[in-house]
Length: 371
Image 1 (cartoon, rainbow, N blue to C red):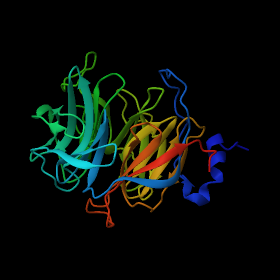
Image 2: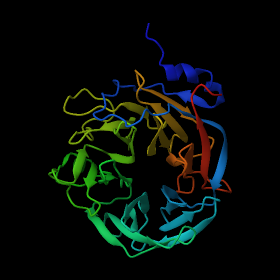
Image 3: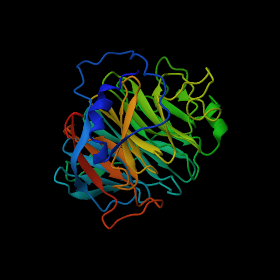
Image 4: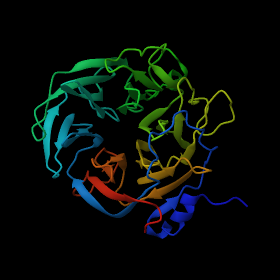
């Protein structure tokens, strides 16, 4: 008789409080990490208590990043970058020129980089001709931040009405990573010469890093939109499936994740299986974050947040807030790292927005043993 994972045991008593374990598609255990954490993570954790509203009245928000003394949010269709103060006040820091929103395209992911005296805001957006990554210096102090002139970091990524990918983040190695969809042309995902259907890795200026042959870090992706590194330095990505399986993947340099040959866990040794998979109505995953030994995954169609415990054997996942807040676009730590921020996405044309939507919510985090 297989022993139930420790986290699963702790969560059993919470199922009636809005938490549901995943029932399908558990793959093999996560491989041993190649790097060791500098400190032992304080986890795992789970959301507890009631949601606190951090901001509301947002229009199709997509990404959130933290700065010293402020946070910045992107709105897909307005192309606005909003500054959020620690007190919850919102103001417009700027509108990014050249954004051509249509379908799932528009102003998507954000990332930040401090380079000497300059703080850059990076943005992934859909233009009239392509998907591209740009960066802009930020000027002013928190409460009065402004966007400077655009500098193109990478252009020429094929766009479409859907499957644009769009998440960007700096990894522990200082390189910029970007999730790129197949632009509704599945064969591009297996074409090593194409930027589409890939996770890309580049220098902050958009160049091929030393020691790499190209910008392609991994291939065989359909529409990845989640990107995170855990305390052990492992890289994770969340990916939309087509009709059957959404995926959580442990990303390895040069690995092929199978699309469009396979979707979800397959039997072909040429491709890397996902660590976890869900039916497409349970997830449709977008944002992904790692907090204290726990991965949190935002579900759009699934209207839930998945808490995933990748070091359990087998990997264990539990669903939170099912149907409570509608579509969830992004998840990330609060500025102090003690809570989980949850970004709804009900005004994107596919949701059922309430009077205050869209909203940025906050949940306190605690060990799974706390009720």
